[in-house]
Image (cartoon, rainbow, N blue to C red; front, side):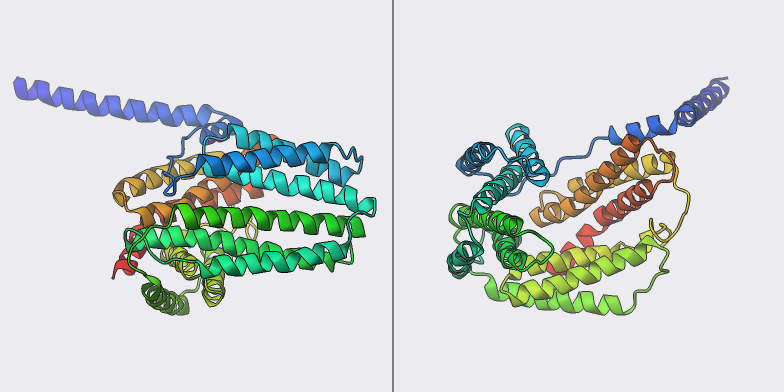
Length: 405
């Protein structure tokens, strides 16, 4: 009798589980596509901790500068549509910088607000004849010299190899960005399809971006890089070894052009090229990060071979497909964070998966806002990015092992 009772309980338990599963399926099926997409955005993304602490004074200084520049920009009282758009954008970014809980995101928004405010101010000055192209050109050599000076102060040390790569990469990222903005300032002045005043304005905005990036680089150099063994030669060996590995893996990779794997393969190729360019310009740690990112993408390709290219195909992606893909991506990211077990470089690379998920979320929101809830290009791309984030999170540790090997 006891055995019979136990069998009945088992059957009842299985039956109850089936009923619960069926109720979930029915609930999802009875929801509208809009409701399913809204539920997708409600799935919380795990927080990856910031690996470099922010100095409060750095953020405070950036916010104060943005506030001052915006007040100056507002006093110009220009009615130009483009300039008004920039001013409103600057105000919005300043507001975000004050409310954002992530200090690094807050800093980025404050920096961007300053760039847009300077653009407005410079436009007003150029319109009045108080600022010329020559004035902009005269500022460029001083900024170029400062970039070179900071590059000579680069350190390649830290408490351990992985921390050294992360910290040095962040310094190099700021310097690389400063160099790119400085180059853009010169290119903007040569544009023919833009008025003289706008060329001057955008070039001055680019120089403000140079300023912000150099302030960040100085902070990282003085406050973050720690004493320790110089790892520069180790960085060079690691880059060359991983670069060779990545190039060899490219040789045997080919996917149908209608698959998202093909697009991701091309993305990996671009990261490998960028890594080479950065390495040749002296940004060794940043080149290592690019190569490692490319290797994780290459590891992820097989999982993407059945995922349709959002632009090349019209494969049907439902709201429920998107929901399930987001759910899997978040689960994979949670597991990867747990499996990283505090490994800083794993966590650093997982920010790429985090970025894919957040980009996909923005695409889902775009579809909701547009009132189109089925098989839009945005939803197809969101689905593909969620799947890629899932595969990326599952493959990060394989590439970490390559670094250590």
